[in-house]
Amino acid sequence: QVQLQESGPGLVKPSQTLSLTCTVSGGSISSSNYYWSWIRQPVGKGLEWIGRIYTSGSTNYNPSLKSRVTISEDTSKNQFSLKLSSVTAADTAVYYCARLSIVGAMIDYWGQGTLVIVSS
Amino acid sequence: SYELTQPSSVSVSPGQTARITCSGDVLAKKYARWFQQRPGQAPVLVIYKDNERPSGIPERFSGSSAGTTVTLTISGAQVEDEADYYCYSAADNNLVFGGGTQLTVL
Image (cartoon, rainbow over all chains, first blue to last red; front, side):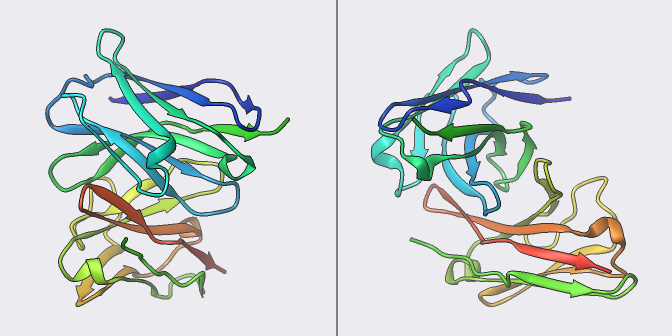
């Protein structure tokens, strides 16, 4: 059974960089069958795709966030990470990591999500 | 950029059929998927490729597609189906989510 677990600070100051890590167990992020994604959800609002990374290290980002987002991987630890720079209160959200299949673009496994609050 | 539009809320009585729509130009050429999200929980995939059900999803969940609109149908909705439902699609190396529909069953 694949499991994903987000970790990182729950409070970030405005203008700083939000950093989160997703640890994957029960499956390898080096698999050629999947992308590894970040998705966020402001409290009480809808889902927003942030971006994804493939085993080759190639990435795709939401155009609205692209200038501030970096997704990277550490295959030795079976982890992938999110950095979002220059955060504002609008970046306050529950952040999820998830597995996205290459075939069919199915998001079949999610982490439980971690709330990140941007506040001074 | 692509947009997907959903009604903000749908309400049915237990045992009735609930229909939730998702509209967007991208759906004319790309598949839609549907998630169920209960409060405080991560989303669960209920439909992919417009009308396929993942294993473990009850048969009362079905999907259909017509042009630029896809529909999630819950036949004989149950109280436990009360949740938020989101559609999404993939195009041009991006994922796009609908705004979500709150389904009330009471």
